Length: 400
Image (cartoon, rainbow, N blue to C red; front, side, top):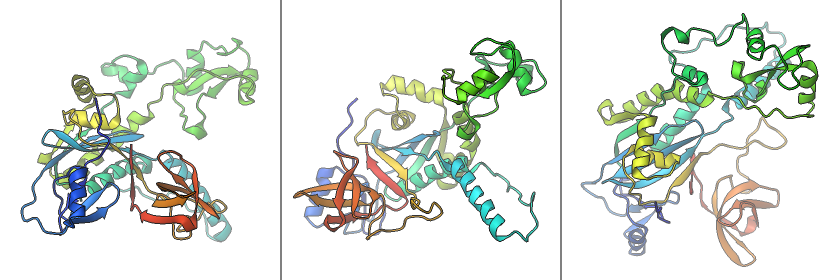
């Protein structure tokens, strides 16, 4: 499958209404003739200097939901005219825990006279974990942003549907088997010991047995049986000291849980935007079957193309990154604003050693700034020889 080296240029009229995307060559002619002007740099969008009385073009958007990346594709007349991957943050829970730590520390310093409070918060109806809600809200932000430049009237979304109990067991469970424990024992420790035969899984001894978390709790590990293993006190101590490495890796079902928790929230929000009759649901096994029939590779944006049942791709894919302010190095409670007129992710043009280049700001230092360019991820240039071209708002688009 060949992917074009260019992406289709998005077009809006004088009133900002979305029109049909066009080829870069035609957009170049319109700009030279003065019939259009640059409306947005990335993704490149032009605005006609006249109003179109009857705008044409209706598009269908396909969404391949995920926990780390989300694939989005837009189809018009059986061709993909826009495609992108959306990169989701994986540190939301850690950030919330960190914020809680700062808040409690602050209250302890400043509000010692106040009696301690507890059980004074109530979760609203429809509450879901912030890390899950964030992922779904980013998808909706990307959809809302694309609707400004393309008249999308229908949506096909893949909803996750997983039987994690059967996945953990390795076979399809039936009826009462869902309620039966995997191993004998009154608590987790006894169940793990019974499963491992009351032996250390490293040296085989049966003396001073302890339970070890394969993936530590502070790194996202859980108390499920597949994340626990029996070790003796000596081996357990040596493992934490780094004298030997545990090669066993547990099966994790974190991502299926994330997809299942927020799928109906995503569906309801799409129904509010497009109407129930214009929102169609599909599932992973259908997407996988279509992808093989169409001869597409495994990728999130290509899965979105499979959801739309087409392999005719006329655009280069993007990567969308939700923009966020970075912390200051010496003060983690404050955020970076602007420094010498520049921000992170700004698209700039710079000159170094007489050569001109275009890149995205990666870091802002005291005397120089670092750019991401097509040939170097850490290219240093001076502030005086750098000019701002475009500042993204909310979402950062990067050509893949």
